[in-house]
Amino acid sequence: MTHPSRPTRRDPAIRAAAIDAILPEVIEWLDGEGAADARDDLIACLDEDGYAFAKALENRCYWDPDAELVEILGGLNLYAALRAAEKAWVEEHGITVPLAVGDRVLLRGQEAVIVKIEAETAHIIAQPVQSDGANYGATGGWVHPFEEAAPVASASPEKELVS
Image 1: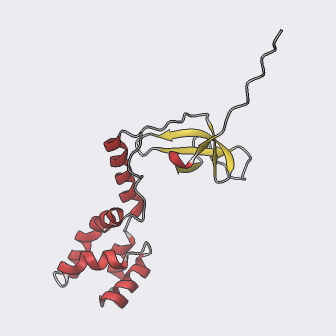
Image 2: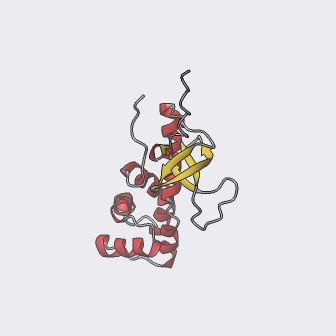
Image 3: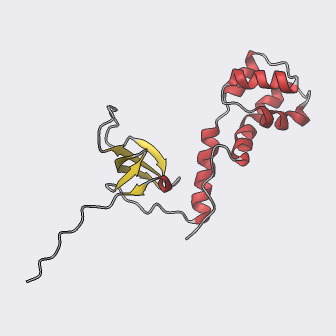
């Protein structure tokens, strides 16, 4: 079954959703001045660092940022917007993870074991088979979209003896 691609942090809709989450605070900070263009300016200058975001607004859109605006812009959360979009994508398209806890997969160029599945976002959490020095606990590890994992074939079955 084919389905539309998973949403990403770079998708314009994700970026716009993250902006929309902070827009009411920004409009309040603007106190009515330039509120009509605020969303477009914010989308054009988006940066995950509040200070860099404010500097871009100042340099490219002639805003006059202060510490309060930097704090508001620092509240931008692309991750939350992405998670919400992934949950909607999974639900809308009936996405299911075709892997199970305990399966071995290739991730990041190495073999890993799935220790948890986040069905609502279709992510897997896997731990490397060869220790990378990190302590992940029982269900922690690398978080990846399931489609980035390549299943590792289990041990080949023993050849049957012909008598």
